[in-house]
Image (cartoon, rainbow, N blue to C red; front, side, top):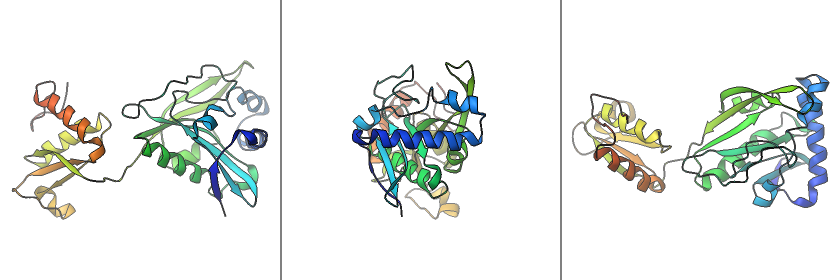
Length: 263
């Protein structure tokens, strides 16, 4: 049975041993030995994650089975030794949280360790207001992330001090937050206009849902007023949504039924 908790700085030696074993066995199944060694240039633990309280360990059978975490800072990947780290705090409203330093011990692969860590990261980031995740995947980790709903933004070749490049993939995932305390921020005269508004809000990272008479056949929903459709958002997003729609009403954007939303 898997259990989890936050990592502590006291167990850094054990975490490093787990990571080394994971890299050599799991990444080694995809890359030649020279590129496995080169991978250590950008793999490992950024201890800022432990200090921030965003790094988890998973235990099974009284052993460390895996580890991984998420970041509210701009660094996208790498350990303490990796160049280019950036401790700037991210803006949850406009930037994705990072998924960082995911490792599973070779003795515990295909037992749900990685999925558990990802679910913990997603839930924790959502509680702080983030609406998306981003990471850089190794060739060994990419299948897990694809299976968990991440999509590839771009494939990259990571440079190393060994004169070799190591393949990776920058990936992202939208955090699906259940709509709570729904607030209507717009009443559209039909489904087409409502979908324009929904797309407009989505472009600014605001999730919304449609409620209305014209959706009755597919959703079983009704509203006062024939053909009217409500665009609803979570109460947490109400203020930002109303501000965006006010800018549209003032002429910054076009929101009619005959043309797409545009600046």
